[in-house]
Length: 328
Image 1 (cartoon, rainbow, N blue to C red):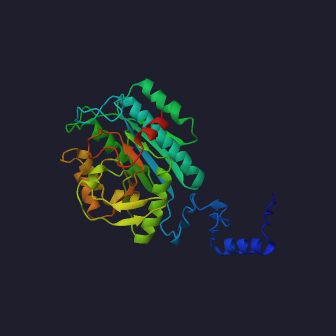
Image 2: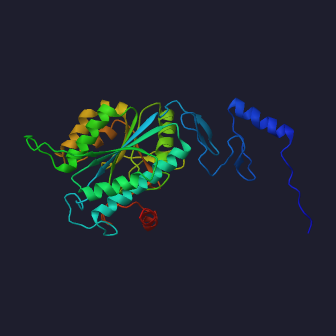
Image 3: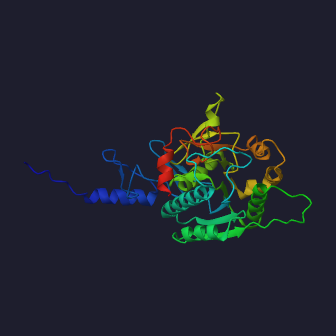
């Protein structure tokens, strides 16, 4: 059999690649999808945090809304099944199992994100609602396996208050208040029954920079593609993110990403949500979506482990069992 000799890159090609890098251009070999200016394949994440969002074949968008920091507030509670419900969750496991698997999925997603966007500071803050020390230690042992900046905050409820809240809303209020004092840029509030795809954090930050730049405005993101979105044939706008399509939505639960700018701007709406007085409880949050754009991904980046028949539960067209097993 005749051997086929593979030609080496010639001198002129090397010079051309270096020149493209200097000028900030990217080139792609459409034969094998290699991008020599980035030393990556087109199937990988090819965007550069804070600089440009690249989509083939649409090209690049120069980022004007650069993300600087990300604070993740994970609300944990190991002993409550479903708030105000008696239904079993999908997979029918104990509550602490959902919390630990959800936490593990977030940790893996942060770790994956840091390998790509390592110049963005990420901090994980766990606000725990009355879990026992054994569970707290399990969370701590899980986190220290990763090189992640974290803090565990135990929720302390003031029993002397005349206006006592359900602990679910107390923990939510604690997250909002802590973020108002300590966060600097993007804030991700997440409940402990959401399983994350490993690309979730990377995609949310990449999509935030791209979409906020295109709209020239702050936005909100909900990482779940809820079933309710397909219950009615409501019109929606579809926009391209980093590796997902994103659609506009006017509703979400308590898991969402918001900027510090919008947190301050809509503080009263968030406090209305944290009061727990409305029906639905998220009414104050939804009022923000009437003014600001909120987007959710297609397909979903997270799975909400609610009852399988819930319209706010598991997302369509996702291998739920695979993600559940991967985070054991």
